[in-house]
Image 1 (cartoon, rainbow, N blue to C red):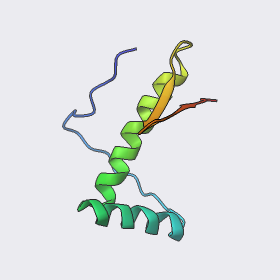
Image 2: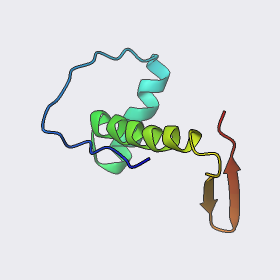
Image 3: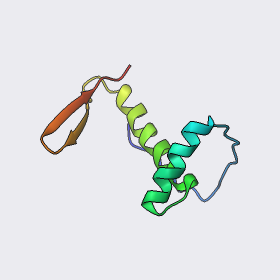
Length: 76
C-alpha cells in the first residue's frame, strides 16, 4: 500500500494530554536535538504510521540495526 502524502496543506487541531514524565522525556529529547516537542511528536507519528502499514503486510519485517546489533521487532 503506497504511503499517503502528509503535506496536504490543511491542518487539524488535536489536544493531547500526556503524563508529565513522558512529556519531560520528549522535551529533553527535543532540547538535545535543538527542536520542539511538536516537531518530535510529528516525527513519532510519522514513524508510527510506517509501522502501522507494516502490520498489514504479511512478509514485512521491522529491523532495528545499531552498530553490530540487529533486532527484529515483532508487530502485534
